[in-house]
Length: 240
Image (cartoon, rainbow, N blue to C red; front, top):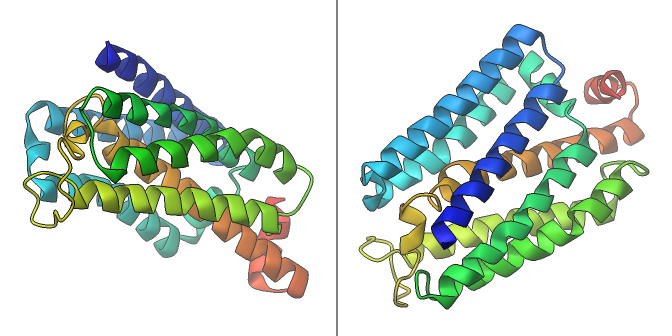
């Protein structure tokens, strides 16, 4: 039953995240379609690898997790137009989409039936629940204040650290991993099988990219206040 619920919720979350980005990023329709196709293809690859049992090798999971992050960073740093488009995605939307992290409660459910063990499900579960519960209030706040507001940065830092810590705990509690030093029953075994494998291979990278955009927006907002005529300040003014 948990797997069926997980499939429904994972599919819903991915659909909303991809649709929100594709519909709001300020690029031509052809690029939006290309972005939607790339996102759909990546989800397909992640599902195919997990279904074939490929995630049993920790290195494969690491590659699937890192690839979207490296691709997004490479495009942002290598192409100013891509960077400007990413910075133009509304911050309140990025923050509000983290509401779906309330589904981190599923980690606690998996732990209660012995499919996850150790500190990983507790950290990932409660960290996501707190981040998701605060997402809407912080998103509303982001419509009234600048992105470099301390309250927004505090939430964004917490949400980022939650994901980073969860990944580290998942790796170090994965049975059979050369990096394992936490031995606690099932460890993070469930994250190697569908639908839960979509969390580290697709959802976590997407949320980390979102947090990075918020940090970048905050940096631009600070630069605008300090020097409105700076290159970053002018870019921010155009995007606003």
